[in-house]
Length: 427
Image (cartoon, rainbow, N blue to C red; front, side, top):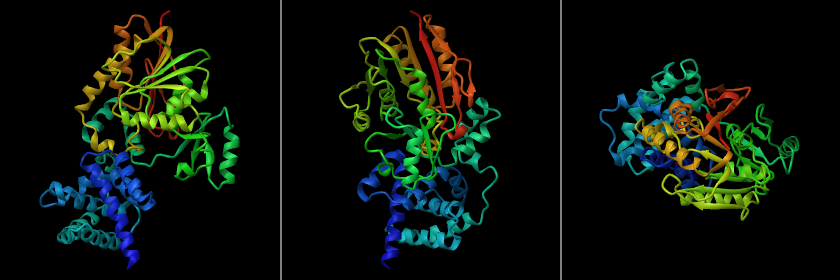
């Protein structure tokens, strides 16, 4: 009996996470709230994250089966039906078990009236086969249309990559330990991992793990960072004596990498969100950079920064369409009307920060977007209105060279979707 109650508690926790996301909270915030209250649990996060990852497509099959939409107060029951659907179709749970557990969870949520609805709708849904076009249905139509236009040959692979779990990738502080030595340390501790084939500081873990328990994590030897994101510091190529601005720095992965690569440089890290600045400070403290990197809370789109920098990293706010496999709630939260706002903000930041770049300096423009209006088109427009700016060609063995920058698509070399453009200011 105690085991049954415990299992129901885990399921109600997962429902709470999904419902928070359905009602506007980010997945990261919802997960953090659950972890702070209950601690981490693999089944809770598999059910919650998996349901959200496949939720757009599951909803397209479930919604037509409802007599009427659920009220706002009953979104947890809608989430419960989708979770039962996910459990049976993607976790190989026998259909009778998935249905009975969902029905029991309805009562555990304090809504025994919903047991009949959950039973009926879920049985009808599970009688359906997932269509071959499920990945297509598992994305908002506006995004599919833009991906088809931008990547007429690659869009099916992009959708498929978005629907897969992203690997856990580590960045090794190669000034303190070689990647080969750290791989040996992982093996001795019982972790299976491989060196990334493109990025020399990156290691891919075979299985997701609690990063706090990894050897050397607390001491700053390794950090969690996708391989595509790890390219930023190398592309900015800091040198001794540089003054560096990381303009949208939180949560601090790229700032920390820059510090590890060139601790002799004077680095300033800026972010507009006070809560994210706290995470930035925590990251820098773990890496031994506290007090050695200047940290500012500032909205650079609204407030001019004084002084000049020899190198600027602008990891611009964007649609995050390149990291959907890592943040599946983006499919639920992002709207087509957001694009004009984001593109305008990117343009403002480019123009403002260019004034802070010293003559002869380098700016690296980066996004985790795969939409050209935020990437190469944005840089094209910037160059057309900025006479003292020129782009510098970038080359990688994987990905796609654009007119002004370089684009990684999701899943290429098991990386996230990322865009980079390196800009030089005339002396």
